[in-house]
Length: 332
Image (cartoon, rainbow, N blue to C red; front, side):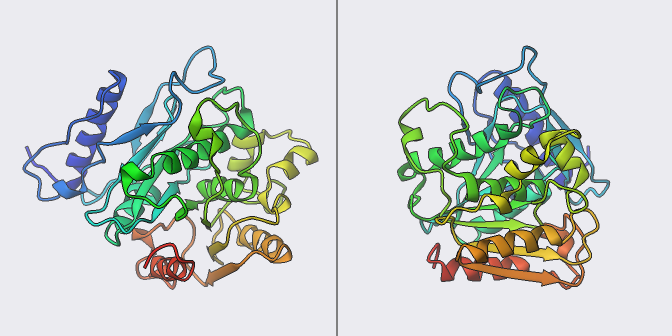
């Protein structure tokens, strides 16, 4: 049997899902593959002891799909997340900083590799502990509705701080980065970190959910046509949402005076989530006096992450993000 990176990764996910179904931590995937270092993380943090709140009568079934036709890399996505969790990526030499990653997927699913694990590994190489959030999807029947993903993001930030010592993390150096609809979740967290969207359950919930810095990357921001991303809007608030509901879930309308500093980035030829989304958020942050660094690129399209930025003007954006984080005192 031929083993390549894609085979090893898919085997790791299958093993992880099977182990999680039994309530266990997955054992490391093993193979003769030279890409073994790219195996999936085997350490996860469940967000909700006893199960996520507000579950539908019939729980969604977690399902992983593969989009990549290239055996050199994976491009998986997952939906039906009934067990929201953080996948933990520990660096060999932690520098005390942490980043929580919220991948995109239009609130239809959560992208695993392109906007999740690949970014986590890149951060690990720089000594930063990374936590990839597998958040619940608002259209899958959860009682919290449009606030369900924010519930998971708030809880996740609090758990990272609560367990900071165990992960060699400074609880005052925890940033958030998100992509596309995950960028909306990142922006929602940086503007509504104090909103009461779930009932506290333990000591972790006494801690702040405010990220120390936030980086919404090509984010969905608007919930109003024509700037809204139609799929994200439908999945988050529904096609017939009122103007009041649109406004409540448009982060640029909800910026508090104590929002964290922000790093914004978008390609101007993005035809899926138009650049006006980032410009709306930038204007709102600047109006509030929030420190903001913004990068706009001529090309890059949508959903480029790290790998698909190569050969475009947006290539290397991650180094600008890292430099910005250094300036914010997040890492050396």
